[in-house]
Image 1 (cartoon, helix red, strand yellow):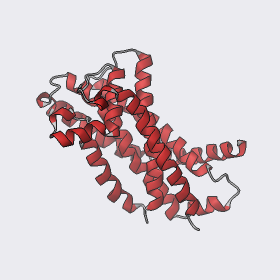
Image 2 (cartoon, rainbow, N blue to C red; image 1 turned 45 degrees about the horizontal axis):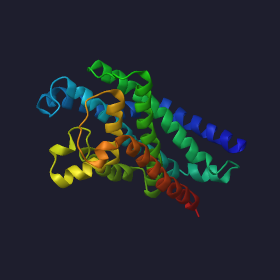
Image 3 (spheres, one colour; image 1 turned 90 degrees about the vertical axis):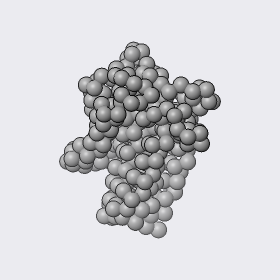
Length: 260
């Protein structure tokens, strides 16, 4: 166990070193959510169902979750690059714990997500967002968002191990992430959507985390009388755990088959 933990720590340090040497990647991943914050918050905000200044408080938790979703692309690309360059094969030929590569990847992505959340919280505060229910519940909201990011990291590891080359990742991830974001409560309430689209949005895993975070932050929510709307917190915990239970074994199985 100590051997595996030591190797995982070394792998985490390796990935974080890569992030530190390529800060332009972090800037790139911040650009889209910041652009959405400004465009939807200031240009379209007055015409949304949650009007006026409160729309930005409604929007910001959704932007937090959207950023976690798009981080999936960075994870998948990094895994695909390591596989494509033979890095994974070299580590597999060394006396390192087999679990260290993926555990290190997951831990490094969590550190990166913490950095992203810190920057986005500052950005949110600058445009008028606030957490009204105290530091404890605010941290609980952030923890829920990071739990979703951990689950998406395992989805990203699995996708990155499937694609033939790193360039293919964007072809898969963006068409997956965009409808997931649009068919959720990130920008508008599901009740404002066509009926069947609203049902999809209510049960979207992103919607559960966004709704629970809005409640914990004390921000305006979308309401609704559906079961999903009334149980956002258990769904916000259950959906990520289900994703981890499905995709972590798939990623491990795929990793073991690489090069065989």
